[in-house]
Amino acid sequence: HGGIGSVDAPEAASPVTPEETDDTDNKESLGSSPAASLPTPGEPDAPESKAGSELSEYVAFSGQLIPIGEASSRQVTKAIVDIVAAEGPISGVRLHRAYVIAAGGQRVGRVIASELNKAIAAALRVGSIVDDNPLHVQGYQSRAFRLPDQPTVRLRAPGPRELDEIPVRELAAVLELAAIEAGWDDSDALFREALRLLGWKRLTTNVRTALGQAEKIAR
Image 1 (cartoon, helix red, strand yellow):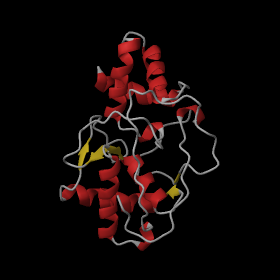
Image 2: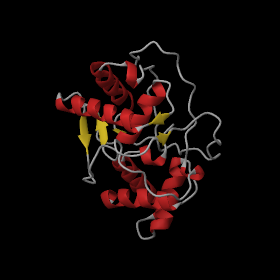
Image 3: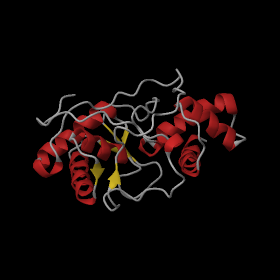
């Protein structure tokens, strides 16, 4: 999918995986949270293990976008739809970060998050995208967005996504796949098998929380 701007393409950002994430509190809702740092080149490499062949490759948005401060509302809304077309279903937090990275930025600050939320709302109003909110959360962070003709769930490798950027229904689908090997009786065994499928290793507090939410949907 092509971009809408003429800025130079940013360097590829290295994904941050649960292997590299401290046991910190969950992030606040987008649009009201402090500026969130994005993965930047030079961070530690991902673990050597790779996502299993059961998961399809994640295709990330590759366009170049105009920074929020220079783009019109219509341009930002079109870019949101373009990103969803490439990556949907896509979580709200990933949608924010994907835009900022494609515009050559490094951080999702409050002003940027607010403008992106307005663009998401505009795209939802006209039906260009639809949302999925199985956990019935406020805000857009934990919702998933897709085009009307895209499937609700696509089982994919993490790709450039952090754990909190994977839609909860997609994590639930990974758990269902993991349960074939690990069963449902031991959550830790189930979660470790899910991490193996995703190509990650470390079962942190944040990972348990995220997979625990997904387990509620998967069961």
